[in-house]
Image (tube, rainbow, N blue to C red):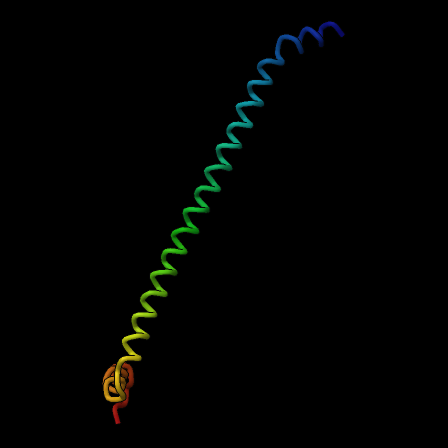
Amino acid sequence: MTILAAFWARFWPYLAVAGAAFAAFVGIRQSGKAAGKQEIRNEINESQAQARKEARRVEDENAALDDAGVDSRLGKWVRNRK
């Protein structure tokens, strides 16, 4: 029993340091993952905002056109111009 107590008394600081290092590693890793996820969310939100602006711009352009303007603009998308 004294051998185990001597072993424990000698090596527990090393085990504590290893445990603290592992906990720090896991904490830093999780923090980095969360930051990366937030960065991706920000990029997605920015691209969606740009797409909404572009769609609004096109919709406003089309709303400002009269019937002839709409026909001429749609003419490049229709195969048969009759």
